[in-house]
Image (cartoon, rainbow, N blue to C red; front, side):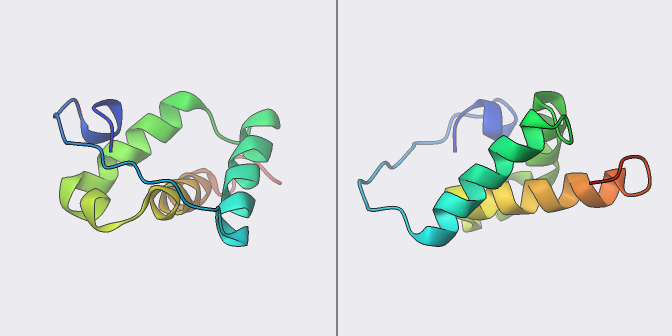
Length: 83
């Protein structure tokens, strides 16, 4: 988790190379589509990452965090915007 993804706290980032699983590729594409269609924005993503908290954020993988973020944003915006 980077500093910006952890409320400014420094956490070591462990990077490992691996072949992306299909669900990880779909998650990445989903984020791109949501942002491209202005259904989410960077400020919302930052707030949602911070709202997960350090404990939850540390338990999730990179793409699991983004799935949680996209879900939280969509539930918060339900009724305000339509897909």
